[in-house]
Length: 160
Image 1 (cartoon, helix red, strand yellow):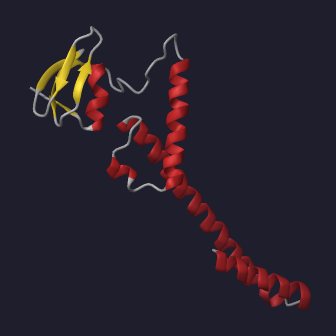
Image 2 (cartoon, helix red, strand yellow; image 1 turned 45 degrees about the vertical axis):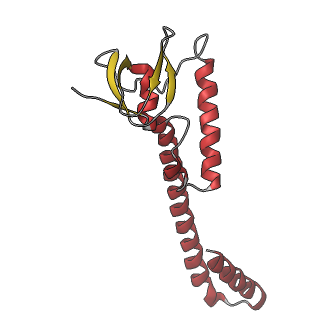
Image 3 (cartoon, rainbow, N blue to C red; image 1 turned 90 degrees about the horizontal axis):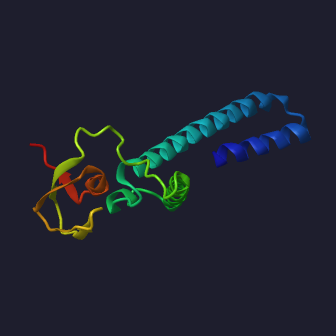
């Protein structure tokens, strides 16, 4: 695009200084190419932003390293700002906040059986019970407490 722009600038200067009207069609063609490329790049960037926004809903506030590896610094910065903005919005709902990223589909039951895929350490549920999440251990937990860990790959839902 830089090359097209520079060539157009040279030709425009020639048209102005030397009156070469025969260059006008090629100037217009290159200008249309620049506009088309700009539209394509804008559409690509918009699609990337939508995909990055969807990652926040799919993985939660912490992206896996394999996903972060494929993102540039500006995309990581945009993700961080979106994460903060979403968290601020969720805190503003109700008195103590409302996590709108949970329960994307209505649950069939309030408790689910999960298997721990990797050592995670202690995990506390609402009634104060502390559960040790060790690799290959199975637990019967409240769905809303373990959905985030399922998305992060710490737990998997055991379907009976």
